[in-house]
Structures are given as C-alpha cells and as structure tokens.
Length: 392
Image 1 (cartoon, one colour):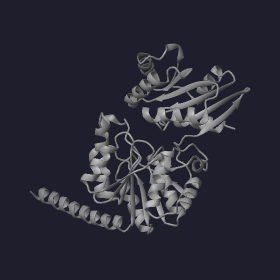
Image 2: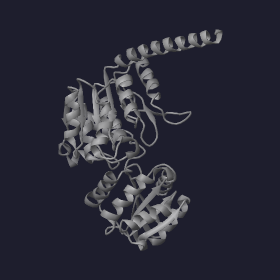
Image 3: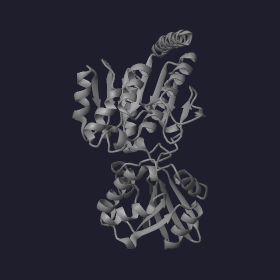
Image 4: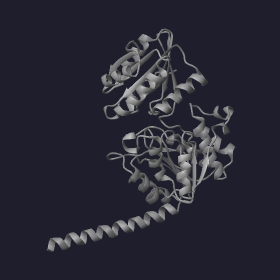
C-alpha cells in the first residue's frame, strides 16, 4: 500500500510538471508574432528557406528550422547550425526550437513540418506551433504507408496542420478543391498561387535550379506580410540552398563530359518526372541519358513507384537505368515488369561511388547526362558528394 501512495505521488507530480511546461510553451509560442508552418509532399525545405530568407532581407528577425535532407537551424543573420539528434527524429524537438526562438525574441518562426502520421501532424500544429500562416506546397503520392493510398487521403492527413481562422497558402494544382474544402471548414482563407506570377528573369538570380512554384509561393507569403517583392527576392537569391536542391555538376574526365543532376531528394514519381521534364524543356540533355536510381530495402514501395514511372514514362527517352543500393534485384524485376527492356538496366547493387563513376564513364561516349533519383539516404548523399567534388 505504501508503494501505491509513492507511485500516486509520482504520477501527480509528473502530471503537474507536464501541465506547467505546457502552459510555459503556450506562452512562448504566442510571444512570436509570425508563426509559419510549412507542410506538403515536395519543396517543404526549399519554401521554408525561401520564406525565411525573404523575411530576414526585410529586417524581420527570423528563425528558420528545416528538416529536409539534413536538419538545420537558420539564425537571424542567415548563418546555419546543425541540429544534433541523440536518436531518431521526433516531433518533440519542435518544442526546443520554439523555446530557443522565444528566448531570442525573434519576430518570426518558419518551421518545416516533420510529422508524418495524422495524429502527430495535428499535435504539431494545434499543441506546438499554432501557426497564423499555414503553407501546403503540394499533395503527391508519398509515404503512402502512413499518410494514405490516394491523394485525397494524403491531403486529409497533411490538412491536420491547417489552423483555424487563419490563412493557407498553397501551390497545389492537382486537388486544390480538397484543400480549400478543409480550409473553409476551419474558417481559414485559402490563397492559391499561380506559378506564372514569377518571371523567367526573376528565376535567373538563383545559383541553383529552383522551382518556380516554390519561389511563387514564398513571394506570395512575403507579400502577405508586407515585404517588398524586390527585397524578398534579393534575399532569396542570396540564401543558402538546401542540400537536396537540384544542382548540375559538370565533370570532365578522359576527354568525356558528364552532367550529374542530384535529384535524390525528389523521391516521389510526380516530382521526379517533373524534374526530368524541366531539364529536358529548359536546359537540355547532353549525350547518353542515364537515370541513376538509389534504393533502400525499407523504401521498396517508393522504389516500385519510381520504377513504374521510369517504365511507363521514360522507357523510350533513356539509354540506361542504373540501379544502386539495396534490394536492387527486386527493383530490377519490377522495372522489367513495367516494360523497361532488360538491355537498358545496369544493376550495380551495393557498391561505392567510385565504381558508379567508372561504370557511367564506361558507357559515356563523348558526353552523358545523369539524373540521380530515389533517396539521399543509403548511398545517395555519398554518391552526390563524389560527383560534386570532381565537378568543374
């Protein structure tokens, strides 16, 4: 019985401590005037960075937190710091970011959503961030194991981060009506962004290959916050890009040229195909066309989706599909099943970047264009760094 009372006291003490900390957190988050929560399938990290850069350029003290390829905290002066995690990513870390931001008396917090499961998305928004500007980049087929197997289901999951009585900004163009319906139920104003609002000339200021819809979305948010367009755009041009942005690395070796596009971060089929089309329409392919697909054994569903996209949409446009990473035999059979000729598939399996480089070099006659897709995890980041370090 004595032990029972001790346990009861401990439970009551823990409950009171938790309640006190909850109240403190609410005070902290509401001390930050501008709270922007960025969600969506693709482009979250880029939009988070772009918005933060635009606000900082206008003199608004802004803290930006990106999950992205590598988690980063971007301070008021634009400098970045790593976010060191003792274990796996957990939404609890958002609490410490809010505490840090409030302590520095920052006027704006731009936070990339890191939750996947519906209940965690709701908790992140309604208990942790309380955004007054909600951002939904787009809705695409990804993380179907936890978000849903259809676009409306995925939209419903991500819609858990839409706040009540506020504003939603989105560049979604597939099922925008679904997002509007959810926002209307919450009495939140929907702002749908037109990609054509950003000119080709304005896009030339980026040192990397940025997507117009990301820039249009970020500029619309800055405009809503009364930031001059030219000032915001200049800040975006000067900002450090995310590690997962699309960059072309030109490599010269043995009188041959290789143009390596790091598209590992765009790991859903729609975004990946969009990047392929962007390169084809706006830049152009050089020489042999190669898709380099990095796979992970715990992401086979994603690999299947990408294999289907390659087999159905790119089979007639590519010269080779190179497979690297884990479970490549399974992915090879999937690709063949979707109609890709076995003669176009080169299965490298789990190997090292130098071997990948050598194989690409061996099939390159004078020049080649490599579009690397699938995952930054596993061998992805290491391979991208290999080509970057050898680029002109």
